[in-house]
Amino acid sequence: MENKKISSAVVKRLPRYYRYLSELLENGIDRISSQELSKKMKVTASQIRQDFNNFGGFGQQGYGYNVSFLHDEIGKILGLEHNYNVIIIGAGNLGQALANYSGFVKRGFRISGIFDINPMVVGKEINGIKVLPVENLEAFTREQPVHIAALTLPKDQASKIAGRLAELEVKAFWNFASTDLNLPEHVVVENVHLAESLMRLSYKLSEKNG
Amino acid sequence: MENKKISSAVVKRLPRYYRYLSELLENGIDRISSQELSKKMKVTASQIRQDFNNFGGFGQQGYGYNVSFLHDEIGKILGLEHNYNVIIIGAGNLGQALANYSGFVKRGFRISGIFDINPMVVGKEINGIKVLPVENLEAFTREQPVHIAALTLPKDQASKIAGRLAELEVKAFWNFASTDLNLPEHVVVENVHLAESLMRLSYKLSEKNG
Image 1 (cartoon, one colour):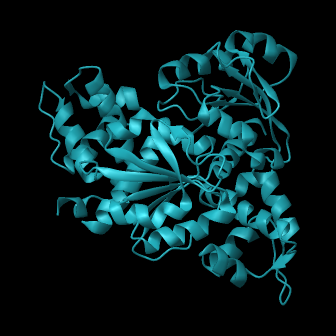
Image 2 (tube, rainbow over the protein chains, first blue to last red):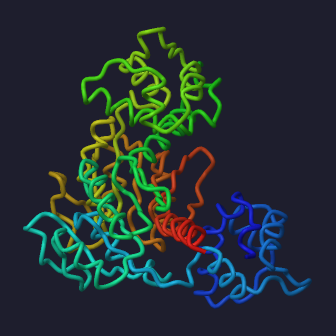
């Protein structure tokens, strides 16, 4: 597979490239030079050229890069050509924010279910999806594949639910709970630790002023 | 200043250490060996010892590390001994989630104001704080210092508001809008690009299964 050859340093930069290329497409721009993209992204043009060479994105002299080709190639490497079913565990403000964000659907992530333990929340509709009780998880996953679970629930409940979902064959977790999950090796996790992010900001601020 | 000597690689790991040390303190644990912490954090004990040596965290043979000392030292490096006033721009679900998260206050981040342009939302109370119209920003910042602005609004509005806030002497931005801000050099930014995070998860998932 081509993907295997791309270094992890390049892979790290791909989501950002993808975001910029998506925006260009939305604005009807179908070609761009490495210089123009460099200016927009504040990355050197030579880094852009090197990165794009990795997956056959060869710019043509006097023409530039084909935006839609690059967009699709990077999308494939990122696995975005799949359609993923995403469930959200925890229908609080954060869970609702994810459920309402249109950018995910656009990239092939479909919210297929929202779950909560709170009986006051169960039955409510969020973006057209009825919140189900967590007891339904087993039945739900039997009926349709769940590819990704977003965990937007308190940290003391996150590990237990994640373990239960891993047993139900959910293989990817988007973890917003302020804890590290302890899951089998075949499962992948992407953490969004907001408190840590805020501490990084605090560090930058005190370094600058101090 | 002591901080200056700490490498950026170590600094990157500090928020996570801080999180674990906070949890130990909450559980009434006042000392821990590098081995025990290593097991919890899945980091080697020797890395922990090296990292902690950087700021005078010397474990004692047979006693281990003083949790509260380490916690406070790391907190100081991260600038957490300050009390920060944080305003939230955009009172949608994400803004509400931040406003309601108790973990921030605990670390010295006080939500001092919430702003929105939507007249349907202005005047509502979120966690005891009344949502103000964005027109009030100038008057608001004149009356009390604002250290950090969290931007939880659509990307097409984020850059403009950020520029306006930078002129009002806000020096740190926690940016949740799916765009890169173009701000003066003295301003610091921490981005939380959720769509990019989800793409990283998608990459990990397709790499594992492909």
